Length: 101
Image (tube, rainbow, N blue to C red; front, top):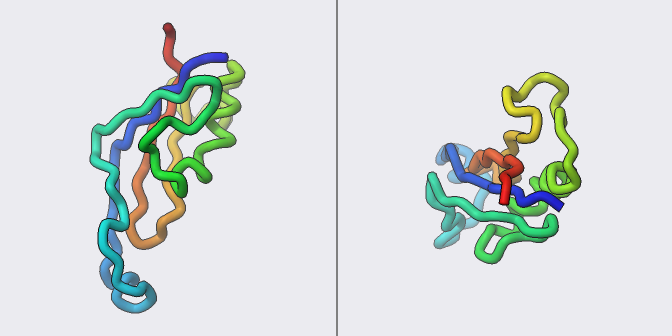
């Protein structure tokens, strides 16, 4: 299986939505922009948010198996994908790509 690098590249916040619907919580997201992880054997890297992993896992598995063109011709690198975690209040976007040893 191929190694897959996961990079946090963008984030957004929606305070108006949080104010309307969310219970106050501390430390909702610990991900820092530029932070990277490497998935070995299509497994969740240590320290990667479980909720983010749930969103990206099928994409990581496909890339680790050598797949590509997940979004047709949308991505410049056919062995990559752009996914966001499922936090509607503070979504983080991740670029995932296969890497060589």
